[in-house]
Amino acid sequence: MADHRQTHQRHPHQQQYHPNEAFKGMLPERAPSKSQFLTLVTLLPVGGTLLLLSGLTLAGTLIGLAITTPLFVIFSPVLVPAALVIGLAITGFLTSGAFGITALSALSWMANSLRRMRVPEQMDHLKRLAQETAGQVGPKTREMAQTVQAKAQESGREAKDHKEGVKTGRERDSNKDNKE
Image 1: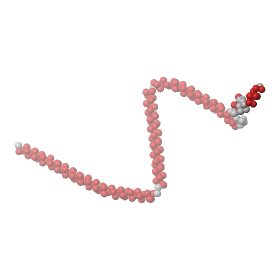
Image 2 (image 1 turned 135 degrees about the vertical axis):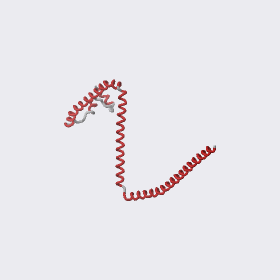
Image 3 (image 1 turned 90 degrees about the vertical axis):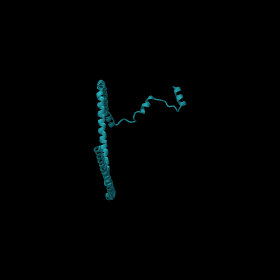
Image 4 (image 1 turned 135 degrees about the horizontal axis):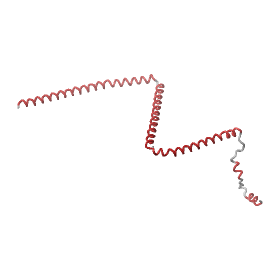
């Protein structure tokens, strides 16, 4: 025992290890309050019950999977396409809903921006643009109408000339037949 004291005195920077001290760091300095104790007493059975139910659910799932796996293998030619069809249908419905929501939000944004717009100034500007466009469309329409009319008259003359040329060719042919 004297040797132990001398060793401890020779190396003062080394600390002695006591197993009880390691556990003291884990334990709280003071005892839990009544509310903490009641919480623990209440939640421990609830947590245990939920853990038991989750274990039973896992066991039931594994048993059900073991029983139905042969059925899945046998009916897979029917089940796989059916699952694909159902998956695609659900995807289509979700996509349709997303597009509908997007359209409604865009319309809502447009309506709100039109409400905030300075209507009289914007309307005057739009009226001027419409009048300018109408002013440009009128002469273009007249010009196109004259072009179409001229082409129609030209086509009519060509058709008449062609028709007369066919008649004169027939008359010549009939005259030749008569002379012979």
